[in-house]
Length: 227
Image (cartoon, rainbow, N blue to C red; front, side):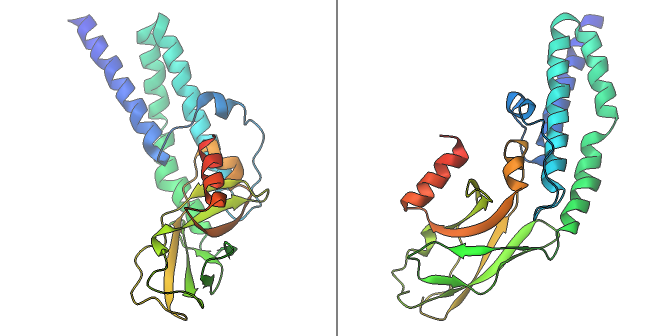
């Protein structure tokens, strides 16, 4: 009976690990995180957010790796290690205190916005961040826009200072027809930083509206996927 209880506790510990790693919308790759031990800059548009996410997810990955290694030789000791780690409340503090505070600090900051060549739209202003890490702006249709304009193919893509694609947002969303020159529409972009792309987010430079059928977009998407 005692062995059965111990096994159940180990299963529970694994479940706790999964919950902790979902805190930021995904876990980091341990090997990749290990190779990014350099200090991420905090003077970019997103301030301390990328570094904080990187540090947190890396610590989580390292703790998980240590737990898995200990479990091979001593499950009971591994369980004690993991319980002690979880009891520190790192994930709860990060989700409920650190992340909201860093997001709030970004409120009002601007991200330069651009439109890829050839699209019949322009932006009235740069993207502006709110306290929930949502960047938004207003677009305007230009000459040549019509109901045949394939607006559903237009996606915002974030780039760093070296023109490396970081992430793709959702398409620009619902457009009130008819489409014609001078008509305005809103564009939103949610900033979701993870350890594996935190170094790029730390050097965020712009958001570009692109056509997903274009070669430039496909190249950006391939870079994001690591292809």
